[in-house]
Length: 461
Image 1 (tube, rainbow, N blue to C red):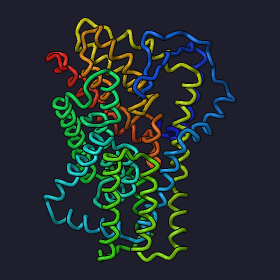
Image 2: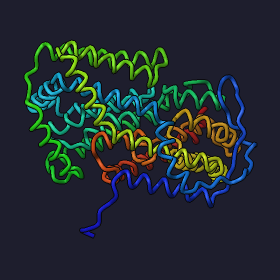
Image 3: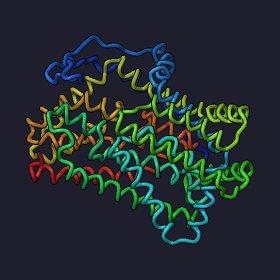
């Protein structure tokens, strides 16, 4: 066992890809009919029928990564541009000087030590709960990993603050238009209704995340060798010590960080007020890179070289995202997603509405393995789950909550492009991350099952 080594992320993802392709030879093809209502594509829950199977062979398997790359081109381009922009920001040494200032405050202030993790996790969770922050959290990994290392924590803490924080907020959202809004619209429930209990759910999920992360951060600070990324982090610290001289904070650094803060504020306003998505956000970060280069007095040649190097560092992340998307391509082309959904829905029926709601949550968690888009999953499942909820005595609000909580598994599933992309960015093997996340995922599981009981008892509408 001492000589046993787990496969890296690329090998693991391709193995999952091969297993899904193999499944298409045994699971019959199936399809639900769809129709357009008020600009939304809805599935007719009574229209399921079997279709001719479409087994995916070796050729389809080998072609799926490039097809995944094409289908995920938008988010891949976003990652490359943001990576380049952050490399330019890093070149100005403003981030390093900010980290040094926070480290000094962290060392001398008990309040800063106590409030840093809860404050930032809550902020990212609030972003996920209100304007659907998800992909937008990716760039923050480039800031919080070095910050966590400088504070004596590890890469896991640095990734968890922006990534797990935003994903938990997204799943337990109360005003997120991309899952709550769309699901309620499809289910015929007033949009953003039921916000009171959803606030309770969000507070509970965020509090569990903060408590677990603070416990882990304190533990790893006392005993650094207990970190699952201890050896990897030693390499990162050595690289940082060799490559970065510790700069003093200057007015120029302040101006550059103000530009960065303005960029983030503009992103929030654009997403919430104007419906911005990846294209607009990528353009915003590209503009930030130019302005930061001017403020930092970088020459044109240095600006271009830094940007290209930053994008080059994101290539492995881009490839991971492409292979993760390929898993969806194979399952969709094999026409097995609708079949699996059709055979899962009868399992919802139960003697008590609470058990039925909990089964809905389990089913949505399974579906989340294949479909990671909140809006996409809502469009596929809510036309079926909403009428099914009526039949088994579960309110449609509760069915929507079960759908939301099913997304609590997103931070650990290896078929999520965002998850594996973030881990590749932080250079954390997926299997190491999954092992660390297991206790937290079990806590989310128990919490979700408990949170689905009160709505069924009070007839939440």
